[in-house]
Length: 129
Image (tube, rainbow, N blue to C red):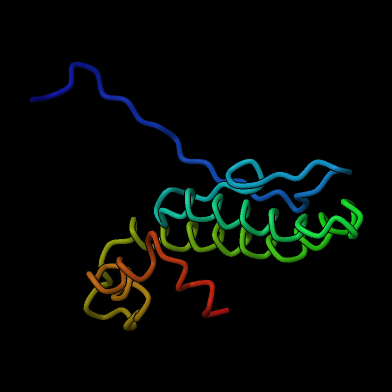
């Protein structure tokens, strides 16, 4: 069945270089949203929330200090997720290399079952950096 009028949905990603603004913390997609290729939205939001709960657990630690620690721990994760989404998106759209082109192991990985499972809906790529 064909659709009567084709459409497209642009894909955007965003990385906020700051997650804490005074006593307000951004988590999940509000802090950084990567392309959907990696399927990390829910996992990242849950991990952000868990870290926020952990740093705010001790009532003797000032909120501002706890939020600073939160941002320090989670900012890099958001950046890595956005960067991985961009990289994976580029390779997913890239045609297989020509016979005379140099071998590209990333293309092979991102187009294999193992590579797709490793690089989507998984945080394994965070360990690689």
